[in-house]
Image (cartoon, rainbow, N blue to C red):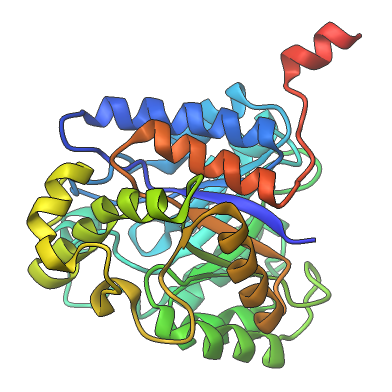
Length: 352
């Protein structure tokens, strides 16, 4: 059976505030927990009015307190901006508060424009950003799992808080480069199909074919993250999707990262392009960037994709203006896959 998870960028809808978007994230996480979703990841973006979360670790801490069983984590921490030790300390803190539930998704992208990336850097020399990513990741794993050689200076550092176990580390990516590194380092891999759909098949299959077992992972594990919009009917799903369609076109054709537009505004602005297959929005490759339709249609397409890629888990992202429709989409998706629901802490306490 396919596992379902959620990737949340905390999108800001036109007419609403970033505070609204963050409250929506917390409420959606609570719903995903009750519906039985496997994990809930928070993305990291900087200086983008469309997306409200530059600090996923803060939202993870809050969501952990509001949920009971769903795994929670970053999708992902953009490692080039930070020191590996600081990231490990932050996620060991989260692991201490919510043991057995924390995922540390690591990404390489800047999460903003070149100017924001430069402003985030502590080292503003001419050294190329990202050129030591593999070294950074190796250091992070060594801090997290106590793997420094005894003669290494960092072996003397006692990372706190110390307790049994550790967060589960995932490498995130949207290219063949990331799939090669995940395979080489024996890490589970999450591919951002919603960013680079033309690369998905080659990247995931390369990862699986070249995976090297590690002390932490005996066999390849891959997640594909893609857009999913589910409604009671195909027509309603396509109507809701027009806000997503215009949002994506603004980003990819105009470089505009504005709040997510309303359906009415989107239909008016898109004109004849509304409700049609849009090459810019669809992306290249075998599968669309977004799967849009009634529940059975969505399930069939996700099952075909999972079967071809030999994956056991898909991570759904839904960027819609209508927050109620977004909640309903995730509810319908869980129902059509018949995933077991999860009791909340309050329900468990009442049953004792």
